[in-house]
Image 1 (tube, rainbow, N blue to C red):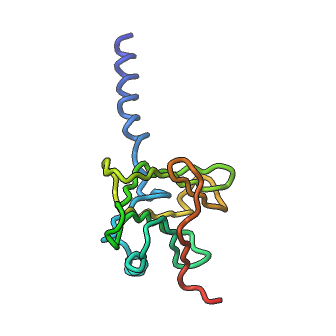
Image 2: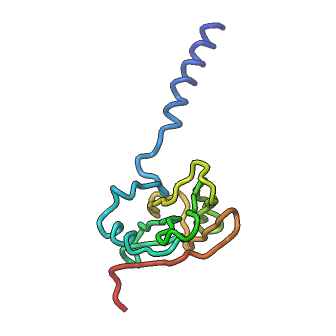
Length: 148
């Protein structure tokens, strides 16, 4: 009986790390701005106002970027700090949640996230944004590389 328990515990202990392994490609992943592509850096450099921006290279792309920017470039207001950023898919909608405060509280003034639609288990057709659990609009949505 003891031998059976030891074997069972061994199997459980081995399977826990395997089941908790992190995917190499995450559907919504934080990126370092310094390591972003040149066109993304150029877009970020052009941002003048605090807010949340959705950026893509092409209209039909499966990869987009979300920039949460709380930097006060005019030094007239307090900076904004972002925390608790996560996503949920519900009713074919990608919901992006984040918390915003003017108190530092381990937050960041500027965050960049990559959305890789192909990595999500569930399909979605829409993206909604929630600041402090209230629905809001993106400050701006920019798609480069398309001509009218």
